[in-house]
Image 1 (cartoon, one colour):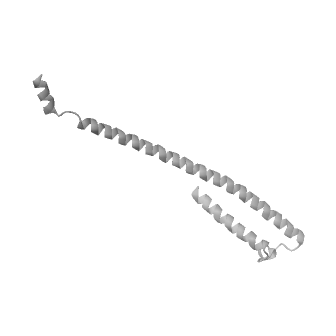
Image 2: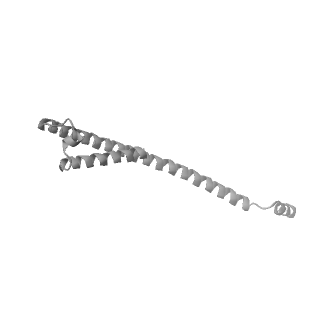
Image 3: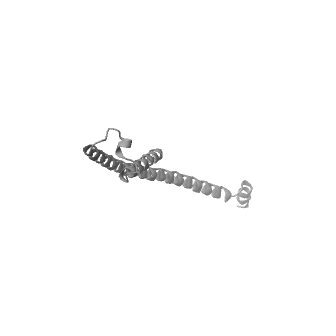
Length: 115
């Protein structure tokens, strides 16, 4: 998902730069699109560019939402794994403490002989 988001960002930047160059008249429409000659064709080209821009914006919103949801899911899974490791560590510590506080066999025999 990260790769898709990055690739789309690159495409969006390239589109924005191309559109900026066309709108500032640094590059003419006929230089990029050879079939555009009349004013009606230029108007149609701008409508198409606006439509493509709107579609890219909508796609960007969807991809960003999916990317954020994927990050939240990965964070949730990581937190679950971390909690499992904490539980395992706690259980090992408890087991270690219980084993260390047990009287040794020799101490148990001395107590049994004293009774």
